[in-house]
Image (tube, rainbow, N blue to C red; front, side, top):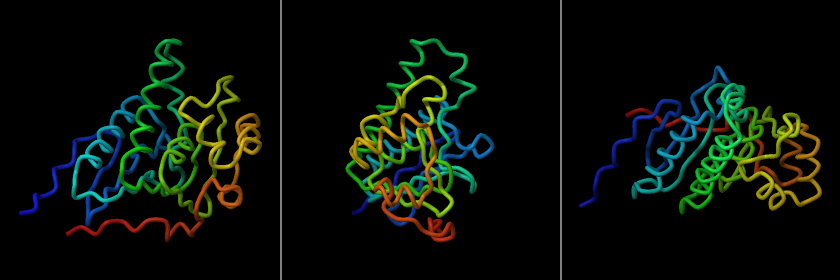
Length: 203
């Protein structure tokens, strides 16, 4: 006898729904372009742990609410008020969450619907496959704040696009288009925004 799907955890900044073997994880802070606050990282971890542990879930689709951003990076308003020690702890926590995504044991598709910058680009790179809408933009702009990518970008980006291109993206802090991201191997496919994700039908 098959067990029924476990109820989804209660989350504050992430929408989480399971339908027909797929878990849909949606960053839900569109007013701040789905920026990654500490609570958002915690919600992401809870959602992905649930997807990992639920035998009825065969894959995950990760995206951002709204049509402007997948994840536009860290929550700068939060970062501005933490100490160096707290920043290190926050960075390590984010890295742990992205390692969970990368090693989930089930395919994770990043449906990149807009800006994927800083921690957002790093989150996409931790996924198994990246599909981008035509207006998506990617980048690691941390250099403008005097810091380096702290969520694994210095490691995953060279593996995907090669050392030279990775250094150019990291050291320039410039954004690249979805088409350029596809050309260099950062994304697997570029599609019209209307084809990016098929929302689950409510029963």
